[in-house]
Image (tube, rainbow, N blue to C red):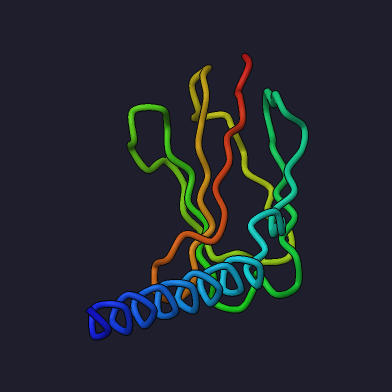
Length: 113
């Protein structure tokens, strides 16, 4: 009986330490940190994307139509102006990816014509 009690206490302590470390790791991440500002939204002929300084270190920027087809791709400079003449009316999704292809930020904008 004593062995079961010791094993139970050890298991509870291990789970508690693991839970605390996961909470600390989650608090270190900044999910609300924005890397991209864009305007105007909705847009008709041009849309401007402003990238923060840390975002232009080899990051890539893609725009997809609502069906998932990639319609624009560029490297993330400090400011990118996208000409929307070839874009049809609708909602578009953008993604900012790091060098490893991990999505850093995503968002959507509307094109009105």
